[in-house]
Image 1: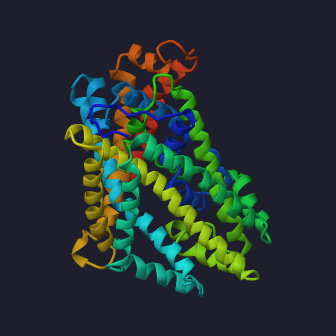
Image 2 (image 1 turned 90 degrees about the vertical axis):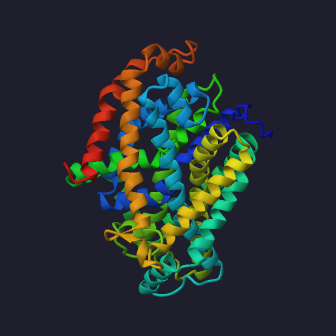
Image 3 (image 1 turned 180 degrees about the vertical axis):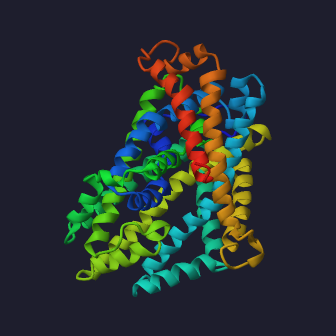
Length: 455
């Protein structure tokens, strides 16, 4: 693919559009965050509310970002600038780029942990009692060298994909990574569901307990739907700028949302039957993946050590693939921005992003124990990046995008993009517009206030 900065790239096929954009959504948010959120919020009832949030709120917000991106045919910041006519609304685009860029740095640290766990599995280091797994993760996250090395490695792999462009890089990698991810998921789900007492975990996921419903469950499901769909990170807007004018935005958003929900539920089926089989509490929280699950797999397959070893190894390969597909989209947000705004080549822009993200990732990693000076007001730099992007930038960008599309952009422009300039019927346009104007902004506002303990 040429590096001509004046040539706008496009995805080469409908399958490429779906797999690449779904890869952006299907990441650690599904395989890591969704299971522990489900465990903490009552299982099946959380899943039901989550699916409703995806359908009524996630899809409209996704379509909105698609509209901005395809209309702008440029990086996220410039796309908002074009659609707003250079008005102050342009700041939404810059915030989206900044959000994606900052997340790239600390997300690469978590992605690097996944690679280390693959290495540890191959070296048969992940064996011991429950306390051993806790100590292993604590020592790893505080190590001044290993996490930094793996952070650079995962960013280097991402760079090699991104530098090849949209079709030869992102699309080709997505067509390889996403099917592999699904196959690994299904293998581990099958093994997990065949364990003794696995039905208890399946029941936890699919038999709703109405007594678990409360405001925290609703707001948790709402927040998770935005997090797992990559809304307000600039990813969807950037990828949509590579869509053709024939791409059905509503259909694409729906298909991606369905894939996202399917993978999230499969992640639950992968984890909870095994957890219940060995009597592990399903609400283990963020430590579920790196501390609890290695112990779960070891106990669950104690009678078949080789199978337990393979399942554990495949699980961390799966995690790494999920992390990589999301990291690709986050990286592309900033790469597209620098390529177009600095009028440089894709390779140079990708290198700038990779180096900068590696620097951020290094400081975030060191803040977890290796360097005391990187702890500010009792929070590590890693936690500050997570807080600022996840609890402030994401809801603010999502809220402003809905207000912008619903109230500022002429409805004819929105309708033209929604219906592909009248070639699609657009039966749900008015319903979509109602959700974007009223329902989505209010829901996002509640998330924002709840996360800051103001409601």
